[in-house]
Image (cartoon, rainbow, N blue to C red):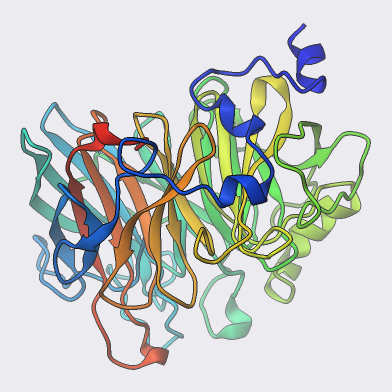
Length: 448
């Protein structure tokens, strides 16, 4: 009955976010303007030198690039994806990626050679332990490097077994001067109190990884691929539940009855498609160093679907939500929803205007069921909210620089939002430093 209803356009999905799949077309949805008391929180004004926020919201700077951490190392650059793990009622841990893109000989390693996957690579993760006060404000307790020797650690995702999966957004290797192949996922235990040795999970694929979300019901890991105009949405089925190092099966999403369908443009929000999965027989091809889309090409030839620049990925409401950063007719971004137990896929939002949404990257779902979107574009970047009814609104504006927001995640009780702001890269010259913020305020006023 559910399947019959779904294909008739009346999917029996979880109620809290189900309205997104039935929202109006992109023009109607993206031109709504929300006021305080509706989905949004009202106009933005400077709450400090770095962020503009709605009235009543405050923020604190928890971590700044270059400042000494508790382990004596300087805070690495290029803050990106981040995951949250509760410790107790008042303390959480944040595991944060560092998307270092410096070449061999320039990159500054985060760990000793015996712990590094590649001793020439400057990417990896740091862990922040944070205490949350009664009003939602946050205080840094300690911070330290938790993994290193990887590169271009863009996003990733948390697991139900308390680990962070950090992903490399590159397939470079020895041919480019590195000591080993890159393009893998690495697992970092959230409870580690010092740096762990980075070991690649090769069965999860070698491609330009972005983000990951785990379905807690099945333990399947969903992966996005960030490559312009040629990206796939993947599923990894581990041989041993919760033990990814034991290997598994990598598959790419395909639309049933429409092999090699192009979902980059011409899509209608709310139209459900039945999906299936095609196997990736060779998830770790050596050819990936020369062609980053080698894995994608295998899946596409087998009938897999084509997206454009898949980035943020998050599990909520029995669903996997993910972004196509420059997907859509206006190439400004799409929000997709996949429902595993129904094997159903729908476009839930598409931007048609830069002042509505431009370049959605990382995302999270709040405890109040609103989607928070981190923008990454060449102009002024925002945090945007998307309500269950499909209303989109600005929540924060970057006043510091023209870099991206990343790593957004809420505390379990929803009192505090944690988010990163990247600093300027070496190629852009000296500029403002990357930072990690905690934001708190009257969340109950809106959809976040």
